[in-house]
Every structure is written in structure tokens, then in C-alpha cells.
Length: 385
Image (cartoon, rainbow, N blue to C red; front, side, top):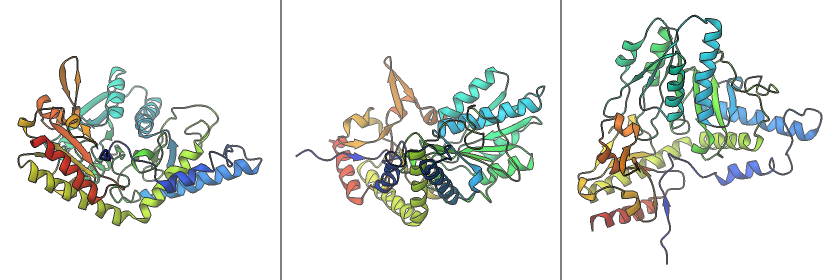
């Protein structure tokens, strides 16, 4: 009998929760109306569902409903936050050269966007991180200039799980009247947050990281103290209060709303579940391989509750994911034209390409059980044979 496969790549994507799927189905079938159509019940039902979802998202992250705009995912939200703010500032002060501070281990949707605007004359400083993958607040402070208009630092790193001190960074930004954007894709649903009190002006995240569907995301834009005004990326029918034109993805929006509601209802128990699983997994791996290296912070309070990034001993060689049968994990490197290419995140924390080839990211989730971890550990034991 074939052993079941076990998924440990929840950092990458989560399955749609059955209750989320159930909430979406009617809006794919019977309630298929366009929320912009306000002349009949189909449009009214869709509009009501979108407003309900907006409230569900706002309740989870602690903000006003009007501060939520739905997008196609965090990549779009990140692009929009950067390009939208830059365009707006350039229209207001066309002769000013904008300076932005970010970090070298951001998601590529941030890095590639900022590299693009550099070619257009925007000045960008990419901060280095320490060996735990954390930004040093003093490094941020040292890079601030009179023309610094934006700091964009991710909240939780998607590969090594390090949690940046967004409160300190945000307070620093506010003290200099600089906007602060954070990619919250790996933070929402994992870390308690209240954006009414947190010094974050723009926040991006995706539905498919929190048991919602792919193809839907959120951009939070603060409306008060400060009011954040950014230019739209899309022009058209004026949906989303003129900020994001295009017919709304009602089933996806309903799904991300329901996913947020479910997280809020069971947040404490779910987080406890994650911590127990990670402790079981890390303890077991250390028993099998005493010389493994945990990447990212050792302090559980400074790392994602679902993530372990492990560099395995040199004696095991590389391509470990291919030699652990039936376990879905993420690798730390890719092989192209015969050369090992390390992840920019692992390179940023000081790992060599060879070390990256021995690094796996294991991330647990809602449907991971202690029994699954036992099976996974048994499969990792095969590497010692």
C-alpha cells in the first residue's frame, strides 16, 4: 500500500478550507451578479456579499472597512503600493527625487518593482539583514534622507520566518513623516494585529496563504493620521471607490472574507497548534541530525509560528527534497545550467550556494497533525541510511 503524502509547504500556499469553499459556491452559480449592477437582486446580493467580506477582513486586521481594497493578490498589492505612491508623489512634486528604503531579502514583487523604478530615477537603498534575517532599526535610521518618502519592509520573511519589529520601524518612519509599507503576506493570520494602533500605513496580503482562494488579495491603505493617497494602477469603471477598476472577483472576495472570519474565531487555538507541531518537528529532526542548523531567529517570539528553515549536515549532500519520499517541502536553491543558485534570502543571511542546496523550508498548517509529524520524521530517517 502506498504511504500517503504529507504537505509541509503552507508558507507557499494553503488549501481552501471547506467552509470557505462552501461560502463561495453560490456566488459561482446562483448569485452570479455583478456588484456594480444596482438595478436587480443579483447585483444587490453580490454587493452585500462584498461589503460583508470587507468587514470580515477589517475585523481580523483591525482597521476601518473603507481602508480595505480588494486586489488579485499580494503581488498586485505590493506593486500598487509602490507604484501608486511614487506616481502620486511625483505628480505633486515633479522636481523632487524620491528616496525609498527597503531590504535585500524582500519578496521579488517588491525587489523587482523597486529595481524597475531605480531605472526611472527613483533612489532606493536595500538594507542588509543580520544572520537571523532581521533588519536592524539603526540601519534604517542611518539611511533616512530629507527626500526619503517611503520605507517598505516585510513583516515576516517567507523563507526563514524572521519577524521584523514593524512597530519600531513604523514609529521611526512616523517621526520623520515617511510612509511605511509592509508586505504582511506571512503575518496576517499568524500574528495578532490591530492596524488602528500599529504604525503601518500600507499593508499587503493574499488569500491563498490563509485558507482562502488564489487570485484574491488585499491592500490596506490608512485613511487617517496619516491619510495615504496613492494613484490607481487600473483605470476603467471606477470600482472600489475609483481606486481599483475592474469587475470584482466576488467568489474570491467572499472566500477571503470567510477565511479571515474563521481565523479570527479560532486564532489562539490555531497558533498554539502550530507551535506544538513545530516544537515536535524541530525536536525530532535534532534527534535524527544533531548537527542541523536552524535558520532565522532561535527565539520563537521572533519567528513565524508555522515555519522552520533547516540546513542539513554536509554529509547528506544536496537535493534533499527529492530523497525524502512523500513529503512536500520547499528547497533553498535551484539548479540552472549545472550551477547551484541560492535563494536570495538564504544568500542574504550568509549561506553559501552549497549550504542553500542542503536547506529545506518546512511549514505546518491547519491540517497538519502530530501523527503527520511522526511519519515525516520516519521518512527523514531514511537520509541517514
